[in-house]
Length: 149
Image 1 (tube, rainbow, N blue to C red):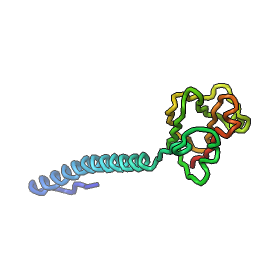
Image 2: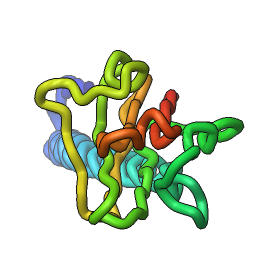
Image 3: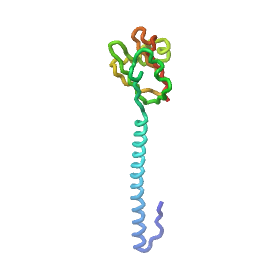
Image 4: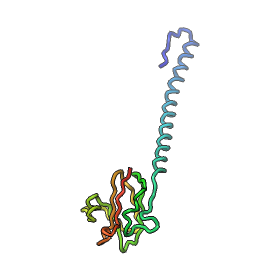
């Protein structure tokens, strides 16, 4: 902080007051520059966060169908990635289930059921499980388990 010393001469007093005013103004500008810098950093970080998420078509060209349970093998998924489920909505659906629902091919109470035929589901960090709950479909391999980092 700038300290005003003994300013017995009028010119010295004026110079010290001007310096004090400049110091105070620079503090204000510094805050504005700091705020602008922080905002730019946040925008850049957000951009990279969004840019890093990927989109995967479940089952590839074949889409969400029987024997798709091995499709995730060898892929690296991240939280925020999107799974695209393409299927005939008249004969299939997608149900987000827990581990028990996945292993037992059952639909837990309150499970989210998707049925548009073009569902897009964002992965959460950790385990994500999906099945088709039409009779016999899950048992025929129409289920996937994905761990997102």
